[in-house]
Length: 270
Image 1 (tube, rainbow, N blue to C red):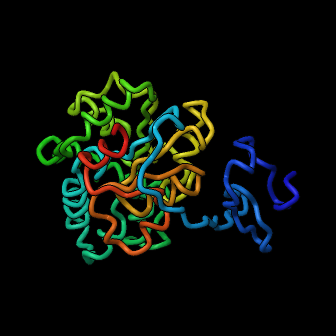
Image 2: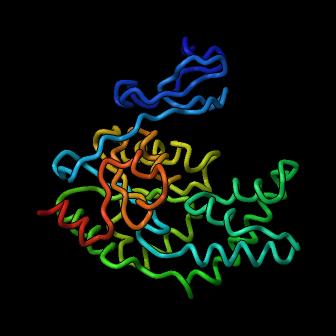
């Protein structure tokens, strides 16, 4: 048993020193170096120290978020949610849609349908939204300029590539096929397959497990705050990309931020 949480055994994940002091606060205020899946204590994460570049040779892998990082797909997902909720005559403010960008459907549905929503009903609604997304994504999903080329350059530099996304696995595969990156990706993790999604660190911890790497051996590329929190809490350096730097708190979880993939390439390869 882990002495810091009397209710659960210590998980066989990574040595605590690799987490740089990031810790979970258990039920009685005791600290744990990784989130406790039994007591569900909220994890804490120290702010990242900003730098102006990432030293590529430090790493063996790069882990990319998908939606908003490699492809523009959020308009399709929002439209899919709206279609299903319209049929249910449920009105949702725009701020709620915005708050769940980059996060899975479970939390969104619990937020809009209430805590009494059963697991079975939540699954049914998530499947309905996913079916709508199946129709909308091929029409609305667009590659982010320069993303695929940057991924290819990273593989040519010897890094392994993984994708860690909140999207269902079939949508991840479809996006990678659209980008021409299927053969470049070593591991895929879908938050839809896990009991907890972003901003919980579990998706990134699972990605590291599949890669058989420690957090110091990889970095994450994220465009949204929930993903940056997730990656940072898992012990990864985070490269923030895109306009999310305007969001309060995003920079706290990023080692470095760039506006686009042109800047990303200059930082990585120059």
